[in-house]
Length: 187
Image 1 (cartoon, helix red, strand yellow):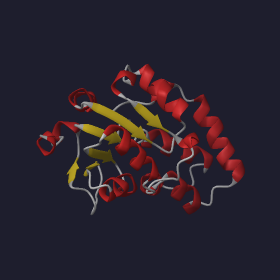
Image 2 (cartoon, rainbow, N blue to C red):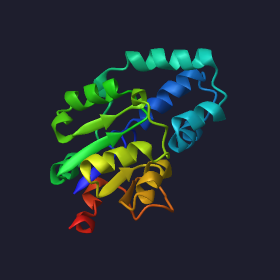
Image 3 (cartoon, rainbow, N blue to C red):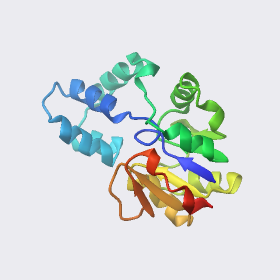
């Protein structure tokens, strides 16, 4: 099986970190559950929803740069799925350099054939362009993501879509942890 992965919230449990950073930028004035809920839609959605100013965005970038790579933690059992896959690729809105550093730190880089990040010039998800490129290059079988916008391009390409820790009307399968991964769909 050849899988396309989202990064934040799918491979790595980054939402607690982003909630903490956004909470600091907003001086603790917004409920953390609300921060999480809006971040789960998308980071850009949360920025618009909370009316984050350019100055606040700059502060958030500064805070994120101070965060050590060890703060990015992979989800339990995700390595088992990566090992079972023939090929894995990532399409993310995050900067590729950060993704590659995190993967290297956790010894996960050898499991990935390619990473498409923010600076690679593709339109943001749910645009299909980056997924089409990856599918043509790697003959993908499935997409794993934690939001519908991660899965919609895969659905358009007629790939199996797997929602991780979320609700979805576009997902073929919803799983809460990687021990539930539906390997049988790829046999």
